[in-house]
Length: 103
Image (cartoon, one colour):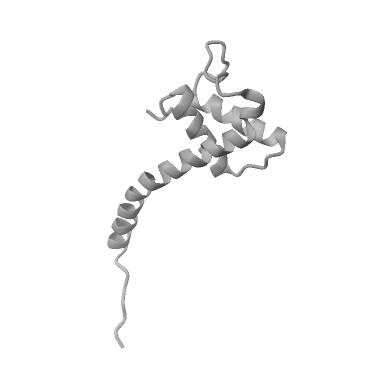
């Protein structure tokens, strides 16, 4: 009987290569899901054009994340972390255009 061993370096390389391809597909889906969640839950009260106005208290990406998370909690939407991130991505790409705070 032949035993097979897993080469950790090869496995890690394979996983990293697979993950490198993942964001291209997920990116579009996340944007679309964020847009859908925003349209379903937010536009009714906020409208499309109130975002990123000159008087906005949101000055960076983390502020926007806090606003979305807070609203999701207080409104009872019970959004998952990934849904909050999708709405964040949608709003940032569509209205705010903040750079990543890691940049």
